[in-house]
Amino acid sequence: MAAPPKKIRSQTSMHTVPGTTQAHLSSVSEGVEGTKSTRNLAKYVPLYHAALKGDWRKAKEFFSLHPEAITAKITKGWERVLHIAAGAKQIIFVEELVKSMDPLDLALKNKYENTALCFAVASGITKIAELMVAKDHYLPMIRGSKGVTPLHMAALLGYRDMVWYLSSVTDSQSLTEEDYVGLLIATISSDLYDVALHILEQKPELAIERDPSGETALHVLARKTPAFSGKSELGIWKRCLTANSTTSSYISGVSAKLLNKTGRTSNFRLLNLVMHLTGIQGAIEKTLMQSQALELVKFLWKQVLFLLDDSEIGKLLRSPSRPLFIATEFGNFQFIRELLLSCPDLIWKVDEQSRSIFDIAVIHRQEKIFKLLYDIGAYKDLITSYKNPSNCNMLHLAANLAPSNRLNIVSGAALQMQRELLWFKEVEKNMLPLYKEMKDSEGRTPQMLFTQEHKGLVESGEKWMKDTASSCMLVATLITTVMFAAIFTVPGGNNNDTGTPMFLKDKSFIIFSMSDALALFSSVTSILMFLSILTSRYAEEDFLESLPKRLIIGLTTLFFSIASMLLAFSASFFIVVGHQLAWIIIPIALTACVPVTLFAFLQFPLLADVMHSTYGSGIFSMERNERLY
Image (cartoon, rainbow, N blue to C red; front, side):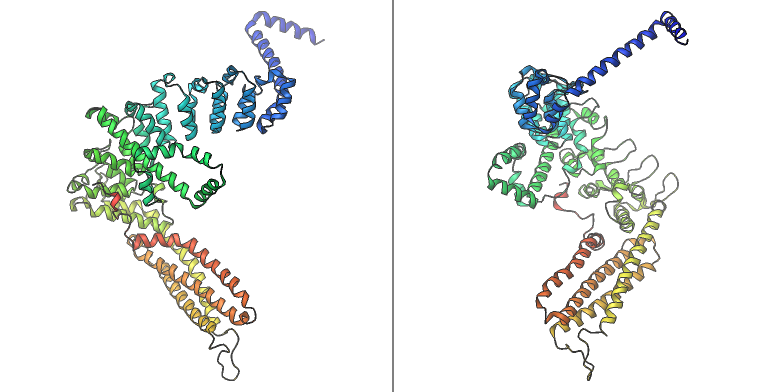
């Protein structure tokens, strides 16, 4: 009974709303096709698994039953079996598969316009790419998703060997100017500085070209602080490796290939293993990267000065961002230094808020760049007198709390407060007396602003100091108690007639007595130091020297008391059982070293930081390689 009315409504709707019915029929048709497609894909699941696992035998059996499968779409993303095997890094499988394929079939794309070569690039296995290109030399010129070439894709992913190989087989005529710019930017972003230098040597004019976002290679390099930071770990070997740009570029470009070839012999494999385990290989790579990045900065800036006039250089340094100020913010010291060496007038450049690079260095606590201020002589007084629209001078900027990423480079709120005080005092030393008491637009002097900005850090520093002192004092108190009791319950007991210890004249007993006394006295000293920390007034100035000094003495004496206590225990143990079980001395001594070593490893970094900032040359000491001239 209900069926006829439904049929009438359906017919009526067909006449009145034909578009809706057509859309419905279309969706039904697509659903049927989708079901068929899913069934077809299910047939290729065994082949998919074989490609993932690199099982060529099973794949070959499947191809004998389904010859069309060699070029069929086996996933919803339209990937062929070659896509899957290449992405799964199955070299032997790909080699056998390529032999069975027509060269034109290697150019088949998936749903997102990527060929199997794009998948090979994504895998990072150069051998797979070589197998495909050997079959079809035109493959490197076929663009993938969003029109990106395989070469560009390899550069974005940072695969150096793949980039060098594809650059040798890619026809330069197929690359546009935009391709070259994008490739240059990609190599710099991926730290492939040797490749970037090679590109610039071929096309120097790229140094001033901009990418779609308006950035030049110089803009990108300004943010690459890790490429320039850190000291060389190779010493004299650095000069041998980086004697000239050609050597540096060549070594980095072919080193991996060379290692792969020589690695076939056991001797070279052993050498590679030793270099890797000892960190020499990593140190070489890091040193080469630093030298290449520095060469790249020099080359880029040289081309900028050669190709552009003053007004164009000014525009490049302003738009779309300011590389000079970005490099300062990121602490890219070598980048800044190279630009200033060839163009000293850059020290006068200011941003939209009338801030110089030295102001930015103060804001972001970049001490290496700030120290360049010492190399410009009397000009220092002019630069430190700059004021921003809020009438804040450089000392006001130092009074502001540092950004969290710079604040956290030292552990503990107390040490962070000490570092902030060091910065404020250092900037204050370089200010003319008139500017030390200058008020900003809100009527605050630098000292007033510093107190206001660091109120929370002072409170956190006080809590950190008290928590640390309380924990350490508890340990020191336990050591004092144990050591005090130990001297009256000597190992081996006392002579009943004289009351003197039984082993009084033994060397081990003398060691026990001395170490017990040293542990007791040093732990008491530690208690007194930590007690003085707990009762301190916690004024701002106390965090500069007073509190850190007490912490240094407290931690040092605590460490000494722990070491002495373990030595006393070892000596006592030897007195009791050593004469009968002499062999047990060595394992006991080694075991006693474990807690001492652990304490040293866990606490020494903190102690070293405090000692360096309190008694050392400090963060503002000048090294020869950090000077401008």
